[in-house]
Length: 195
Image 1 (cartoon, one colour):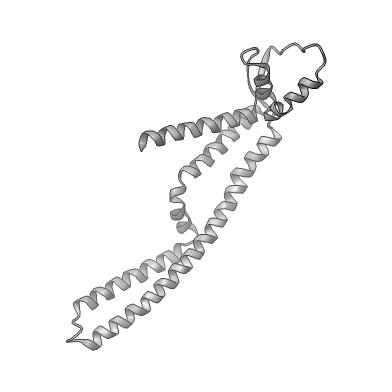
Image 2 (cartoon, rainbow, N blue to C red):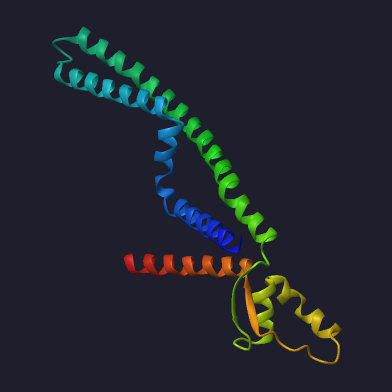
């Protein structure tokens, strides 16, 4: 059970990071799924406009005025169609971005949040006791709430100090936080070296 929870957590964190790293390709993905017909229509209109523009450029405005004017009107009509299609594409992209955001929330963010709260105190692995100060060990085993409650425990604790455990478990919430920090730092180092 513990191994499957850890595996699911790692997969969700890495998938969410992969989505963040690939955010530059988000518009292409949205175009491919939600905007493909409109994008294809826009490409066709732009290609047709380019052909008409080349035909108009090869036609002399003084010698063949009627043909040149007809091509000019067709280009103007295509310009308005291109503008309308671009507006439609922008609207479809907004819808696609909303839908993609909902999918990301449902499949990645919400499960991670549920795992943090539902299985947050699940021990992932154990460290030898005495390796860290008691406050750090309590945070490792019980999550960030232990750090917030440390002053209360100090004031309300009885006179004798409880014996320390043989091992200090590291809970899933802290392990997930540490994994996120490691990925953030690695990403920062890679970006710093590549720039």
